[in-house]
Length: 214
Ligand SMILES: [Zn+2]
Ligand SMILES: [Zn+2]
Image 1 (cartoon, rainbow, N blue to C red):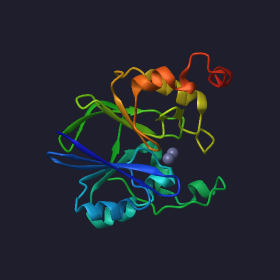
Image 2: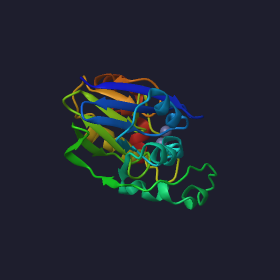
Image 3: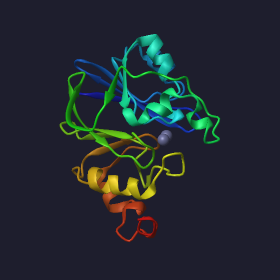
Image 4: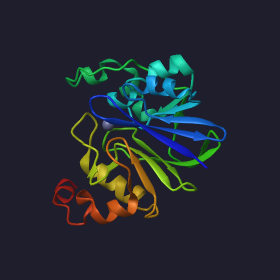
């Protein structure tokens, strides 16, 4: 049985999830304060998987790497955001996190095993390039990053954002998952694919914004 714990940290109330599996511990995202949280739990993360390169999700990543030496992994598309301190500055944003190099890249794939747990990796850009979701079919959950929220979707007004692309990715990849799939998002409460399919105002067929931007 898998155990998943949630931590909420930083000025954007960003969620981190710690999955404790039989063969190791996976930390998803590293918001401000998550290093201290991990330390307080007395757990060593074996892998740090980063859903995407926004500062609020990686603020403690370098610190976690130093303290616990997990393997750090993210999608290639996130590389400039995570390793180039000038990336956001060039767009006029002065939020900064310490860069962290990947030990390996996460690719979109039907099957990859992290710490003994099988995942499907879905590449869903639009919130930003290189944004990935991790789906555990056997355990019926999706680590969603900032793609799909309870009643919302990721913002698309930051560098590399694309509303139509995000909606397309959600429809073509996330909404294909079973209704009972729990969505563990980067912000806000846990929801489910079924709930968002029925209720999410951004995913209605008549959504005027998605039509206009196509
Ligand atoms: Zn984000
Ligand atoms: Zn975020």
